[in-house]
Length: 258
Image (cartoon, rainbow, N blue to C red; front, side, top):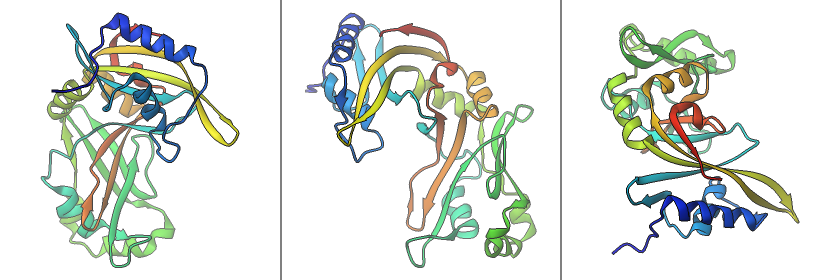
């Protein structure tokens, strides 16, 4: 039987207010990028980033630093088409030399809709064809990647022209509903004291009813980006990531908890 605590909205608000009243608390995971969330989980007494609230369901608990624009993962989702494109295409044919592992290839790109990466990739929201896809333009490759550019030139022309990793709107809407349907986002101020990072948890909102249209608008505004992270022997997964401080724009309903 699970020992995870079950919260009502009322006692969750009380718990968050009590955490706020603690003032500045030290980062419980100083070597972990997710320290702000891990520390909050410890203070709430939960082991995972989910909260069970009777009559409301299960909520994802997300915490963010107020002053940063760093990216936080919304969910993992491999392209709908072509199937297994990362392992079958992007890594073996489009990958480049791994910086640290001899003989290994890497395909790591964080891709925006408002500009091209230095390797010529951008994200396109294609409303006519009901898909979000990755577009490649060889002319946008940075000159310092000349060796890799020659590698791409050596590929069959149809390999280049037909490479269109894409997610259907239908698939994305399914994932958004399943993964982002109920979220509690907590915002913390940060400071360093005696060489340690500390958090002051200041705001908390319960977010409900995310919509596909809001999600697509966020991609077009460079608020949500696509992140590939694969190397020989391991695909860390393709992620949709959001700039911190922008969660609210995905949702139709919000309830302030703190």
